[in-house]
Image (cartoon, rainbow, N blue to C red; front, top):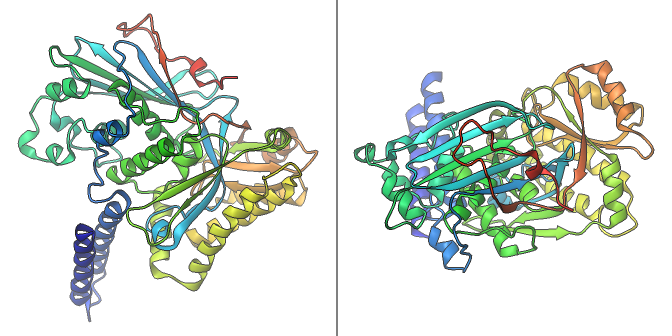
Length: 499
């Protein structure tokens, strides 16, 4: 449309001006400054192409107009939980602008970690309360014990002003509130509004005309920081779903195979991440918010970005075999996604033959990995080969010297392949650390792999990995301890998979 065309013409003009400014000069500082400015401009255009003409707001009306309204629930927790995701093949092709310039495809699985869905958000409307209490929690992976938290109270519009800073307190929740329409982002960025009370906005958002209401929003992760398993994106979906339900919106499929609800939430999370300036693709939210095995795609040369998801049912015997043979290994090192992402996008912008071919291989590999699990007569070693190739393609995309494959991980994979303990494996997500997902060879055990891994690094920890057919689920929890700040409202039972 006209707005996108104008933005693209503006970037083109800025590029011509930048090239003219550095023509014939060897001033490295000037060149770096102009390059950074061009990358910022390109990111702004990408945001526009991902989310449409109003990428910074997910209109509340878009949910209501489609009939997805729910009765608000006051003074009880709305709890949204979700599994993590492992990507089997195709990652990086989901990342804008690759995903709409070339087209993307990713095969992924929703999984539990040590038999728990590791991500959640709980939200409640507090009668006669004021302001918004937001909190992010880091919890131990099996007991749920609190390891650390950030807490912040939003009282004024200015308290949301750092929503574009990913390092600020509770940024994900702040962006979700803006995406859902609590306050327009333009209003937040107006300095003259900084001291304006949020209370009228909260009351309207929660549907109250005659008395003040408060909100409490708490996100929780049972995964270590930098897991590479889609934590931020999947948590974003949990946060949007929990807050939305408190405000009377329901744009989740809640475990049903509702393609419209799936698509709405997937795009909402993508919009959320563009708003937060973290960028990234759509595979994380697809992988964790939708249960089981999926082949997700995005159309090339289509703006705004359009995604589709094919849910692929797993036969009972295939699911059982995967549950027996999939293993997660935490490397002890957080992944370095943002730096690797920047490197990948720069390499894609140059369009070298190697990178173009690798993107083609990634897209084709996603279809092959998904096909390897279709039907009854499945050879899981074929999936292992695709996972092994996938890791090779990821390293090519990141480039030499990117840090995508730390030395300890390289040594571990070499030893496991040499001793035929695994048939395939890849670092989850961007690489650089976080979790490895391994497919054991038939007849091998996690204990055997762990024994070999201990000889490489004592920092590795080994974890059970099982397919989770549930994706995002949302429920009302009647909490008898509401209003008592001394009582920890968290319950690991929320994270267990229901039969």
